[in-house]
Length: 138
Image (cartoon, rainbow, N blue to C red):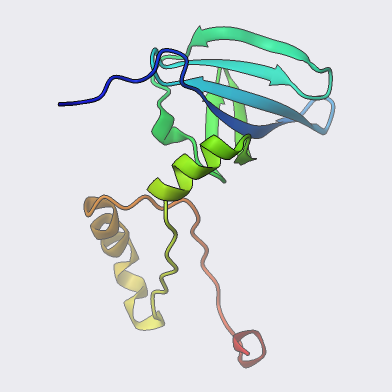
């Protein structure tokens, strides 16, 4: 039997948005309510509600994790950290991290390797390509 989400259950994320016109980063606290898939945004600098609770089409809880880029009404917010202990505990249990390295002899198969990882249900949230020298490898 599936459990129903608690009506006022919410998850909190500390995010920032880069304002191109002002050339500054603006901090926001985003509240996600899984019961009805709505969000609310709080402007941390002005200390007031920026966006009242509203549904954002297509936005799901799985889109939120540290490092994620979430688009909310044309603003691309970067999730920097969890906003409270309950959110942190929920995501730490569900999200574990693993380091993987692809050796140089497999570079021509990187696309197939990434597709296989995702097909197994893993989510890649950080990926980096580097060329190591003997100094950087140390």
